[in-house]
Length: 493
Image 1 (cartoon, rainbow, N blue to C red):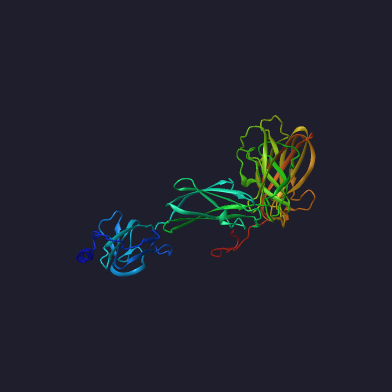
Image 2 (image 1 turned 90 degrees about the vertical axis):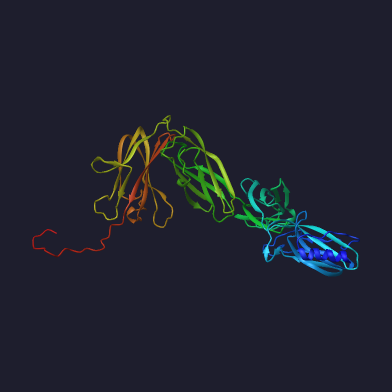
């Protein structure tokens, strides 16, 4: 009994060093700590760990302490010696000492018991880890499909790298798949930080095609700390289809400055699609923004592009890549069209310089035009051009926005005519060739004037573009204050 009292005093008085154990018989069954790793960060997930112990003698005095790994000086006494009867007891620890959360790290819970009937004493230690830091996603890479566009039956493979030793990594594909089942997600560790996630979109999925659908990723560590991230995919079960592509130009040989027109016919269940073309193979200065689309119907569009004057591509035949994209990232692509570039003159040009003939012999690629006021000043505009062969077929058109149109229309202002070799001028009074369009009725805008020259064999064609600034709005005089002081009859004002 004296030994037991001394043991009690040693621990009770010092609170620093655990007593020496002189065990005669077990005091405890098998104590447990659940969870062994916990996170007292206030998120209500594994904020508390429970120390459960079974007193197997009639009664015992039990002390619970927090110590460094491997023993040593007591960090804190969590429960001073208190008598416990035979049976199971639970002590909850919230990770705080003197209302201060302990630092992350490894510790030990020391469970010390003294039998009250002379059974001896016993010391049991349990490992404890405090971890309040959530894992961190370092990288998310889609392996398959490379373009992140999926359909029913598509196998999705992505690699994620996570710092913080996660014990659980999950992925939620429900935004892509109405039949999503978490049990079908396979997660395989690649190394200590990276994991491969694999999932196949179900064949019966009935989600609507859409872009930017998130796959939600989650990583949980042993302490219950959670990290979340996401990566987006496009669902496209009914992509558009290109039915035909046609070059509308009379021939397929072009030079810098020439205008290329392509008509595209397609099918799509989407209400709106984006029709575009890539002329970069043909034009080193290709600017995607310079491609204009004109919708002809729900399933037909016309694309227009003018080859850059600064293009340095060598002469040859090059593909034109046409694409149709729907809102769900469904893409149809066609590269069957081609166009030949001939800047070296192997195919001679049929028209020479084209310019606006201004007053007193001046010439320009652009000019002002104001036909509405009929004041005799810039009421019409003169286009000069030269035919370089014995006979050239010439058409002149204006690219403009008629009333009620949101996109420019190509309107003929001079029907195709034959011109012998020589220099010519054409004066435009603002009317289209069929008399339907009158420039006097148009809103202020920039009009493109195109002079098209075609050889009589239709094997060569050249067009030149001029820029006409239409200004039908006269300036408005807001106010006028006439001078009054010192004015006499006969003075000039």
